[in-house]
Picture 1 (cartoon, one colour):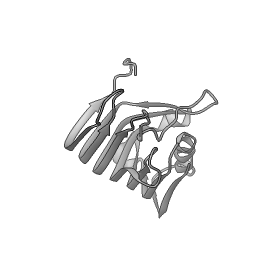
Picture 2 (cartoon, one colour; picture 1 turned 60 degrees about the vertical axis):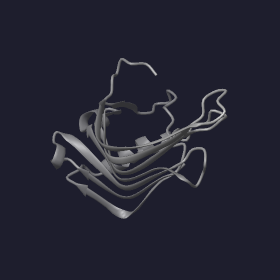
Picture 3 (tube, one colour; picture 1 turned 135 degrees about the vertical axis):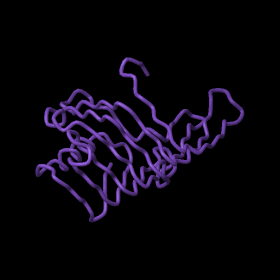
Picture 4 (cartoon, one colour; picture 1 turned 30 degrees about the vertical axis):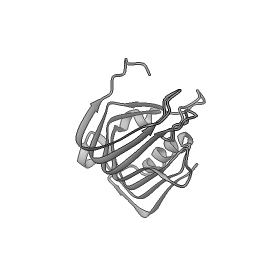
Length: 171
């Protein structure tokens, strides 16, 4: 699977090669295509951390190829720079801003949100996420349960929410 973006990559105050290290960490984990129109990477706005903002993000649906699962104006990630140099990706916060998520579980149990695969102990980077914040995002879902005659369909508008991730929880 591929990660593509437009011609605009703005890197502000970052050591040369930093953006390639981030891309190198992401690419092996993709199960579907991801498109990004532009990327901003800076040290200054979130010092002592690093901030990456991906603009016009589109993640392909893992079940219905060619259809988007995610379309967002911005996806921001604030993470620690030193852990990245040590082979760990510690995101303090991931921000999903302005767009939509279309979640589906088929009658056969296939889930369209499975666009990411974990490392298989082959020297991949360790990943940790502290919190996820959602702003102005429409979420729609169609979920089938075992034995159900019809799916559960729902939709919601998330104006603003923050979820702190519990590192001790399982699942």
